[in-house]
Image (cartoon, rainbow, N blue to C red; front, side, top):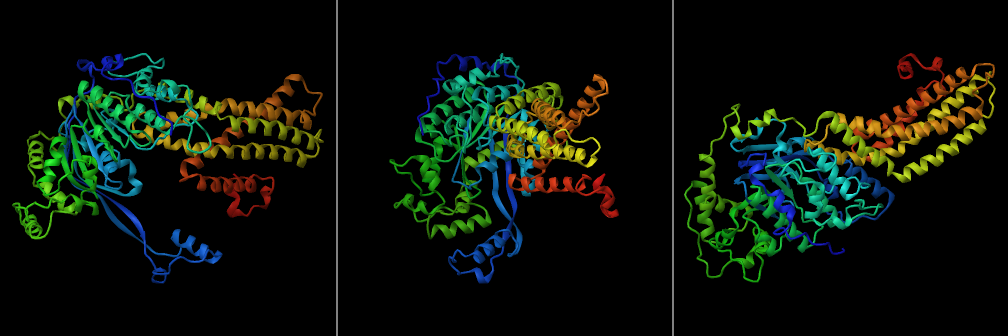
Amino acid sequence: MPELPPVPDIATTEVSTRLGVKDQFAMPRMEICFQNLSVSVEVSVAEQRSSDVGSGVKLPTVFNAMQKTMSVNGMRSKTHAERRPILRDVSGCVKPGTITLVLGRPGSGKSTLLKALGGQLPFEGDNRVDVDGQVTYNGTLQSDLPAELPRFVGYVGQNDDHFATLTVKETLQFAYEFAGGSTNGAAESATQPTPEQVISLLGLGHCQDTILGDATALRGVSGGERKRVTLGEGLFGNQSVLLLDEISTGLDAAATLDIIRLLKHTFAVEQHRAVVISLLQPTPEVFALFDEVLLLNAGEMLYYGPREAVSAHFAALGLRCPQERPVADFLLDLGTSQQAKYEAVDHPSGLPPVAGSDFETNSTQLSSQQCPRSPQELAAHFQHSTVHLDTLAAMVNHPVAAEGGNPPKNLALAGAMPAFPQSFWRNTLSLTRRQLILVRRNVAFLRARGFMTILMGLIYGSAFFQASPTDIQLVLGLCFQSVLFLLLGQTAQIASFVEARVVLAKQRRAQLTRSTSYVLACCAGQLPAALAETVVFGSLAYWLSGLDFDTSASSLTLAARFLAFEGLLFLTLLAAIAWFFIVAAISSDRNVAFPVAMASIVAFIIFAGFAVPKGQFPDWLIWGYW
């Protein structure tokens, strides 16, 4: 991977100073408290047949391949629902003006915790997510806040979901507009950064006019630069809380250090926002920048408190971090098979039992054996630690709004805030401009479609050249084939429709775009290309085939007939685009969308009334014709 340019020094940059105007910060300082938070998900588990146990690797025969496919698809093996816990009884409080590190191995529950704090889990109802416990914002329950919660809490996922053909600057410019910024990029708020400022802060100036590209065929910026763009999108909007999920993926250590330093200095210290970041394996320099550390393992919270006290907490349990070992790596090894090498030899052979019936029994058993090793044992010890008890006491003393109660004054503006930063028409216009750019830059599709339009127009015009007007079957055949060609040509757009859903879902969850505005923008973006295709193909097919056979008619009549033919083709083309848009929307992925589209085309051909005349349909199928 090529080395990325460093982020500018935030201690001296003019942009950081301009963004650090705390007195003009529009949003309230927000404290997030989560108590007894547990998350579980219902999954389908395949039951393994006794004949498959111990069978080993089978020969790659056709029969074995078909047998394996049937088993994977659930046709051969039975499945049962099983609820798996993701988070178990997690409690804590995120203070404004602090930067918190969520640390844990893959699968420990880091992303789930951030989604729960950001109100993202209800959007994943298909996974049958069950959330217990409560999350409060300045004492207001999450369930009591209106749908404008994304205006207060910003969430940046670990996936880089972008349009591959947009440049870095265009991507950030549209994100800025969707967050309520002006279309010309002028600053509207002292703490609302402009795209130019974010580009400068993240060191993206050298590639701001380069397309993002993707991981397959379209080459663009590097993975680290794409990750910076993802982070840059999350910096717009003036949210009081920033939840950033594994933003270091694809970045080198120096770039990660620069970005974390930027977030701490500008957003946490100067603007008093609460910043929560999950990382997989931070370097010692990055780890030292955090104020708080939340350690997860297998859904259990092993520690949550000041970074300076984390080593002392585990040292009291007989787990000491060697001086040559980074603290973050030491923490990641706790609760795993690697923990044994940290157990102190001179540690007392027992841990004092803690008050409480169940825990006292467990401590007595541990005292005669070893230090706590499993994540459950480490979490149980932390729940009785002074750090955790002080946090719970502060949460109890915090004024929590009762069920159905009024929110505190500093969140009272939530009900008066619009659901989206942009108005309906402004959002629609921004989406339309973006859609026109995407259509224009789909060069491969436009070139191929333009060539096929001219070629098929000439072929149809030659095949039906000066057709006899009395041969109605021939004339209808030309009309049917023209419609079928336009219909089949739009199947190539299904892939782009499916890929765009990921970006739409991300922006829709963040309350940045409306679904209605997006649909209108997609329709408007297709109009120029559809009109050009209709005019070129319709002109060739109409005049070469001799559909203007009535030479005695006036020029106005001939023009009206030609425009009527073009209009019908244009409307048919728009209907085809809309239909495949619907197919892409209801399909899980492109592998499902394409077969559904092909099956629907077959149905259109059968029920169109040309291949099978209307009179030959049985009564129970005549509805398909209409």
